[in-house]
Image (cartoon, rainbow, N blue to C red):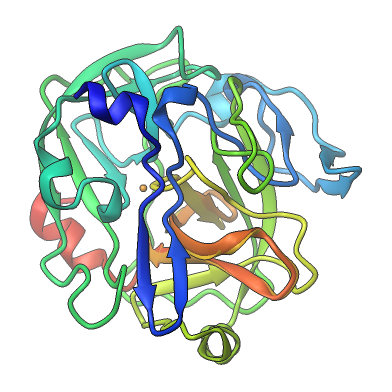
Length: 318
């Protein structure tokens, strides 16, 4: 356990001559950042237009926790570890790479209903972790979702509520506005954030994302959804893994992986629904992986919730 606190949890997977950085950074920092974002209170996060200026989110406004209640911090020994999204009072959706192998044995807790991963809200122990059976089978980080069952139910109310899920294989058009949130790094290999971060990113057609990452030596599958800008600047990053990608009121993705953080031309890739990617109130993805953070030409990659929807129903009944 002590070993995990002292050493970074920046895991890598080799793909040909390329290296993927999994987005959960160093838990000893007790923090995390969203690249191109700025601190926002979980109780004060609005669904409205925001833009990037000087590396910060502008155009936002404080709102109450009731407007942004699905984001959670998954913690290990009291440290922020990965993000997650509330899908019921007993289940959290997150990224499988956060809990693969021996990592599934550790005593995780979930903090819900707070802008800060160090204090406030409700803290509940994780009782069981279920990982998609196809995780990592056809490609690294394929089907990158895990479902965390809680030892006791969350109390819904001010600041704590579930996010809606899309239908099986529900499509989201290229350019759909989505929001991703978490406590990950504010810049690639930078320090994390004590306060919740959020940034808007457009969903990118998978065929375009697949072509872009093929050149970089990575494989994008149907279980993934991409989001971000060709010129970079906005993205999920280390410690955002498992967080929600939300669009149209639905959880459509889970922060999974990418080529760095917010690099130009490197889109984020999300599990087609461990932090959340949200668009119009739907969880569309979970933060999964990427090639760095917010790099030009390297989109963010998220686990696709809609593609993996049947497994979620099988485990949770939702």
